[in-house]
Image 1 (cartoon, rainbow, N blue to C red):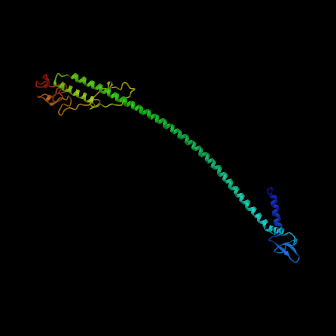
Image 2: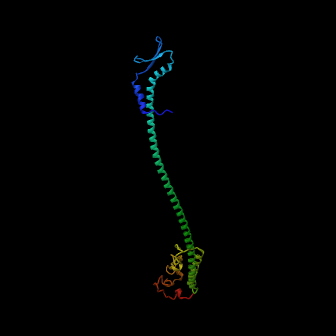
Image 3: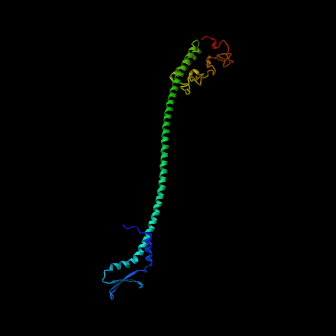
Length: 273
C-alpha cells in the first residue's frame, strides 16, 4: 500500500503543472515523416515520440490526456479537502451537541432520581397519614363508645333520681299524687328513649365527666315538663286548685304575695285530701 501523499509532493506536482505549456495538448501523426508528435493548438509545443510504427500510442494518449487530467485531479483534491474539512466541522459540532446532550441527559437523570425520591417520601408520608387516620378513627370509635356508655349510665342515674323524687312526693294528697305521676311518666319516657337529655362529648380518660358531677336543671339537662294550659307558671297548680275566694294558688303565686299564700277557709289546700 502506497504511503499518503505528503504536502511537499502535492506542491511539487502543482508547480510542474503550472510551469508546463498550457493545454489542451493534441496528438499529431506526420505521415510524410512517419513520426508521431504531441503538440498544442498554438504550435508552441512539439514533443516527438518517434516513428509511427513504434508501440507508443498508449504513451502519447497518456501524455496528451495528462495535461487536462492533472489540473482536474488537483481541483478534485481541493474540492474533497473542502468537503472533508466541512465534514470534520460537522463532526465536531455533532460531538459538541452530543456532549451537551449527555450533560442534559445527566441532568434529566438526576432530576428523575430526585422526583423518585420525592415520590417515595410522599408515599411514606401518605402511609403514615393513613396510619394516623386509622388511629384517629379508632379513637373516635372509642369516644363514641364511651359517650354511649356515659349517656346510658347518666340516664340510669337520672331515672333512679326521678323515681326517688316520685316516691318522695308520696300519695298523701292529690297534688303529691299528680307530681309523683308526672315524675314517674318522665322517668318512663327517659327509660324508653322518648326523651333524652343533651349528652356532651365524654372523654374516657376524665372520671369526673359523670352525671354525678353535674347540677341538673329542667330545660337544660332534664326534659322540661310542659304545664297544662292555665296552670300556674311558677308552681303548676291548675285553676281548680286555686283558692275560690282570691284566685291564689297554694304558694301565693297568683292573687296572693309570693311566700304568703292566702289562708281563706275555702282554699283547697286547707282541706285535707
